[in-house]
Length: 208
Image (cartoon, rainbow, N blue to C red; front, side, top):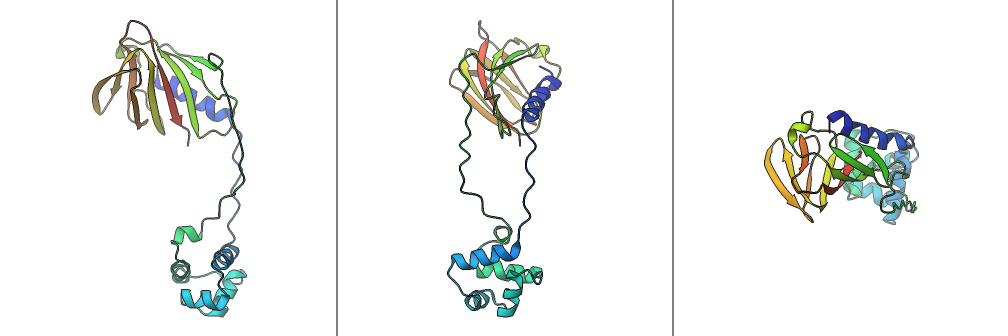
């Protein structure tokens, strides 16, 4: 499997998803007010905790002034949170309830000279992970056009057969059914079957 083959799988997975919605800009004043009210503090109490004038805090909450970095630090300390938390909008409690089921043998096929891939959850858009089952056809690293490498992290789990897992920074490792590996996918890696039958593995690759 060439780097181009592996990259094409990642590209296909990303192309299946829709463009992510742009993030809404954070209204700092509303965020400060929300945090203050969550503590049941009045403007006066919050201002005292932060070491700011009441009028200053009021102007910040009403977007009538942009706080200096020093004021931001005081606000974070007064609210007992970190500065990044002050600028992080709360996540929605809404459950998207997304799900994709792939029956055995019904994944989307993607063949390469060294692997037979079956893409799982192909109908799921905007995935953060790319899961796929692979039948390892290669019997020698000479069948690869150099190391496979790409962005993200990767998890490998041997479903059947025996493989030899090669990486550019570690000694080759023999892996059998039930063995797994989690690794930096930017590190060169290749997998070959050493059992009489083609080994079958599950791969999960991050897309973010």
